[in-house]
Length: 153
Image (cartoon, rainbow, N blue to C red; front, side):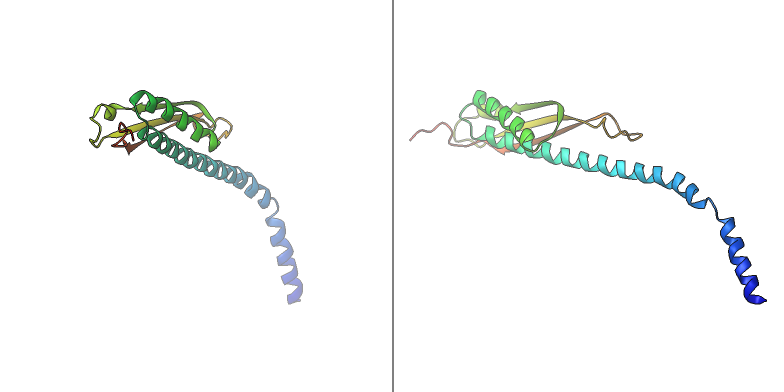
């Protein structure tokens, strides 16, 4: 008789747990989806910061080898925009500003140029609670100006 009692106890326990998988799924799936959304948000944020930082470095390096302040502004702005495009960053708005005050230093005197790149990244497609619709990322980089920029051969 003991084996029969064990079988009845097992069958009874199984009936007590009916529906628990559904409740676990109702609680677990939305929490998992929120977690996945936050991971995607973090990944996009990190990628945007790296891309904007790289674009600022490219703009500063490009400006540093220019012969004049006006050339530096134009080439740096184009280089920063091209860098963002090459890295496939989808900016809602973007801007590249260049501080060319170092070009007023006499030729042969060490000076620096600074480029600042700002990109507003679209995040509205994530639909995660608490995540903003867009994120503004700003990074700056400096580069030494070519000391011999005015010398000709």
